[in-house]
Amino acid sequence: MNCFMCKGHVKPGAVNHIVDLEDSIIIVKNVPANVCKQCGEAFFDHDIVKKLEAIVEQAKQSKAEITVINYYDNVA
Ligand SMILES: [Zn+2]
Image 1 (cartoon, rainbow, N blue to C red):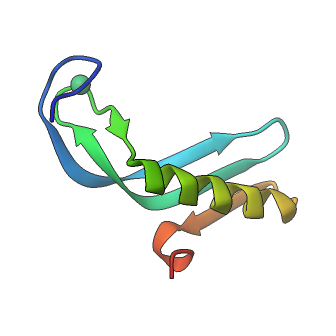
Image 2: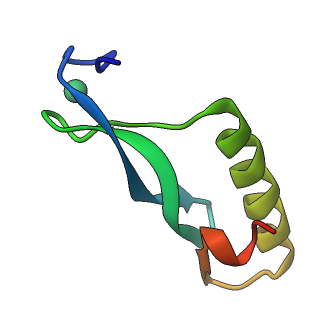
């Protein structure tokens, strides 16, 4: 697999996914992703995106200013 941005080599890894909302920030750590070695762009699989959306939705309910979540704590 090659990067859609720069055509560099993409390798499996993990990234921190940051959601910047108007009055809060949600950080999901250790999200499995394919990361470009050249430009650092991260690509998520479809099922990972679905899980991320669910985690972020849940985090929004807490109304905390900053929420830090470990991806693996939320995936059974
Ligand atoms: Zn790239």
